[in-house]
Image 1: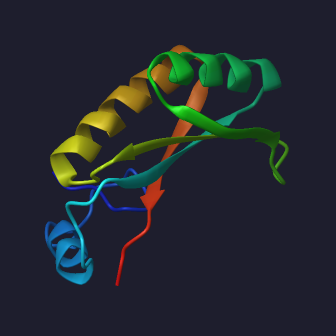
Image 2 (image 1 turned 90 degrees about the horizontal axis):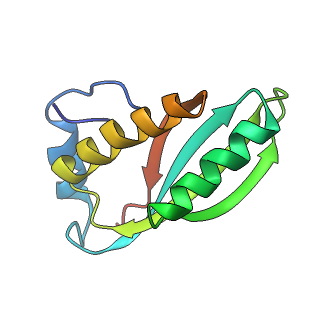
Length: 111
């Protein structure tokens, strides 16, 4: 099932098709950002360490406005649906293992 580019919720099946239609370079490698939220600072940093071991770059770990800890990770890849579905499955598991919530991903669309 295709995922929305801004959430982990299932999207209408044509969303990925529209993204590919709108993006001038849909097969281009680009930065994809992944968002995680933790209730405890230590959990956010332990997750960041694990993500680095999986070849993600950690953009930042910081306290967010809602008093939770944001861990923002990045990886350069082609964000096509099968790849992003695999990433989403993996990142949900890694987040659960560290008592952290995986909130989804985003990337740019070149118009």
